[in-house]
Amino acid sequence: METTWSTFPIWILFRCGIFGHKSRITISLRAKVLIWAVLCVVVVTLVSAYAISHMQINLPFSHSATRSNVRDMLMEIQVRNTTVLTPRPDACEACFSHNFKYVIDNDVMCKLYNDSQEIDLIILIFTTHQHQKERNAIRQTWLNYTNRNKANIRYSFLLGEVLDENMRKLVEEESRIHNDIIKEDFVDTYQNLTHKIMMAFKYTITKCPHAKFILKTDDDVWVNIPGLLKVLQREKMILQTAVAGACFHGANPHRNPDSKWYASFQSYPHDSYPGFCSGTGYVTSNNVAKKIFEISKNVPFFHLEDVYVAMCLRKLGYRLYKIAGFNIGRPPFDPCLYKGDNLITSHEVPSEMLISYWNTTCTRWKPHFLV
Image (cartoon, rainbow, N blue to C red):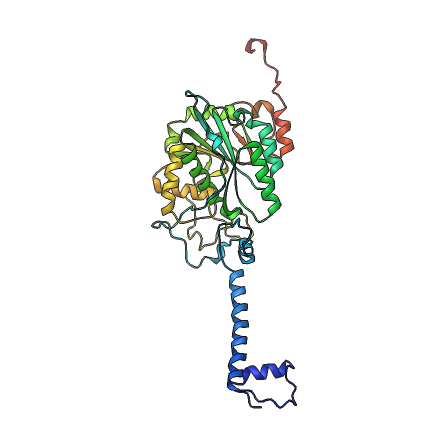
């Protein structure tokens, strides 16, 4: 049989053994069209599956019991900078929006219990569903100063959404017990930490506008609350137009794809960042948080949250302000240091160590005339 474009599908079927070589089969035009249509559907399906597996996508999570398997599949796709086709611009016009919805919204966290009460500080803690042990350790230690969100210091743990139904139920139960979790329906991944800080700022300026200052930190950080309050009092004017902490005024993008902080040239087409204050712990005022949230719509999305905050600050004409005592690492433990005035944060402190630090008092000997 002579192979032409019209008989090519038939040739494939012969080669695959669908029709025997000795079979005498006459194929009508209608049958040829049908076979071509089937082959086209197969090809389109395969190409579509390949394309979806290589897309950069971030869809809100659906809580409907009838959510489709396709949505679930898309939720599991990892966001990759390398899929950006054109270099990221430095500015835009209303190109970025944080339009996610609350899944858990604990308004009680900023409730005032008498007419004279003020909120000096709200602490916003990045965490993940799996880290209940870390959250409990923080509640048992340095969050004691909040008096379960009834004192002049308030706090919240911040989450995005996950597919694991059991994890979601555990967090919902935890929230009912402690009333200290905020959660929105963006996918909770490292690549989406910028959405998490936007959620934090949005919550603060809308639900807790009377809070004077904000601390953003992580669930593996020791925070010296008495020392921090002294810093806030000392730097209160500077923090009206600055973000402060362990700040760096010069830093270069990590171009190695294996790096946790990898940024492709397309996602950030410059040789250096505008600086940043380490996301392990930085402070600012409610005023600055409001300005950052407002200006963010004109600052294209960038996945590294602390760098993105610095980009917004630069556009506002505000600054990064380095304060001694904010540490990106973990200084050797000395209870007199950790509970004194010279250390504000210590990073990478496991939950067992955190509890041990909290229960250890400073017993350093002092000369009699200094006591």
